[in-house]
Image 1 (spheres, rainbow, N blue to C red):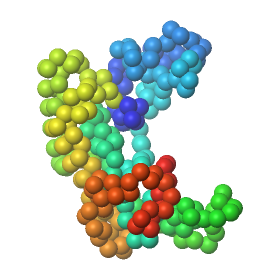
Image 2: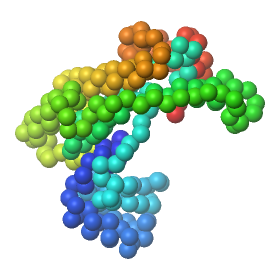
Image 3: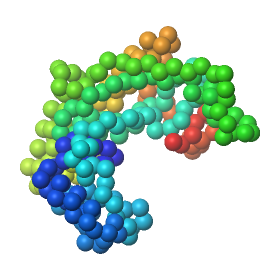
Length: 244
């Protein structure tokens, strides 16, 4: 998540990031003297796959600042006969609230892929089913620099970040949150509202595909707690779910 937030932002210091990228290119990818951004204030932006190797993270390159990031906010494969959606996870709110500028936000609706690779398919599961129809609908940009609800929410978030700094938690690092910004009541409420607005935008595009409005309860975490401990497979409501 931290890396995604950084890809939607400018590099923390263009001059420093360029120098860091140059240094990284001259060193072994497993060099122990390359600082890791998750534990170092130097922001050289690296990542490790096993705790010993080290690679430049995508956001270490200035050419990748303000990138496009394509996400599925449900965080799971969810296939329901009525084409309803699960609740959206709060990570989508972090991608909007935390970057240095409000990203462009293009809501999309995909339909028919469940017919090509349904989770209930039998052998051979790895073969896509032919002769199925699928479609993709695109909505209008609801983010960016315009006068949108997301910019209003971002202003409130920036006020929380400043309050957190004044409380003695130091300067914020892009993509890294203090405990207060993770779990504070106001911070949680902002993420909830931002996620609700994103779902609203996606539902608008869903409606354009010809589907009727879904029950508002579908967007609530409490609704999906009824699934109990079952994480994958066919659920009580007939839907099929799989971790993505």
